[in-house]
Amino acid sequence: MFNGTIRENLLYARPDATEADMEAALKKANIWEFVQNQPEGLDAMVGNRGLKLSGGEKQRLSIARVLLKDPTIFIFDEATSALDSISEQKIQEAIDPIIQSRTSILIAHRLSTILAADEILVVKDGCIVERGQHSQLVAADGVYRELYETQFSKALLPEEKGVSELEQYIWGQQPADEPYEAEES
Image (cartoon, rainbow, N blue to C red; front, top):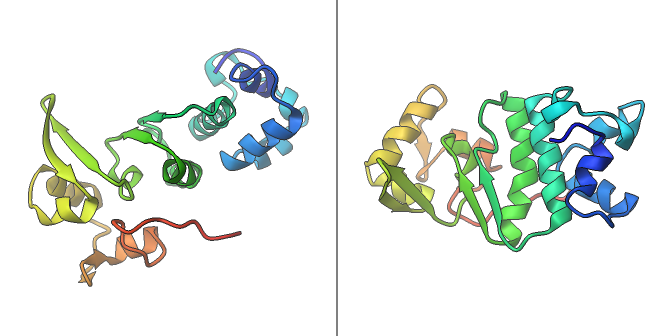
C-alpha cells in the first residue's frame, strides 16, 4: 500500500479505471462494504504501507488493485498469513473465483488456502517432495499429510466418504478435489 487514498492505490494498477471499474474490483475483493463505510469513501487515506488498515483490509485492497490490473497470471504469496479466521475467509472468498478463472499460483503455509487447488506442490528444503491434489496427498501419508494433520488436528472429525466433516463445511459439502463452484448470492 502506498501513502495515499484508496482511489490512488487502485489507480496505480490502472490509471484509466473508472469509478464503476473500481467498485467492481472492490466488490470482487470483498472490500466494497468497508469502503462504503468510510466517511471519505474512495478518498479515505490508507496511510503509509496501509497503516490505517487491518491486515485483512490491506490484503483485500491489494486483491482489488490486481483485479484492476487484470494480469494473465495471478501469484498469491501468503495471501492469508497472519490473519484472523474471519479475514482469512473473506480473502479466500475473493481468491476462489479468481483461481477458477485463470492461471494462479498460490504460495501458502496455511493449507486452507490451497485445498481446492488443481495441483499442489509440496516443497521441503527447496525441493518438490510431493505433487497432487489434496485428497491424493492426504492419502499418501507423506509431508503434506503431516502438515494437514498438524494444522487441522483439533478440527478433524471422523471421515465420511473420504472427506472430513471439516472439508465438507469448508467446501459446502463438496470434496476439495472436485471443481469448486461458487454459490450465487
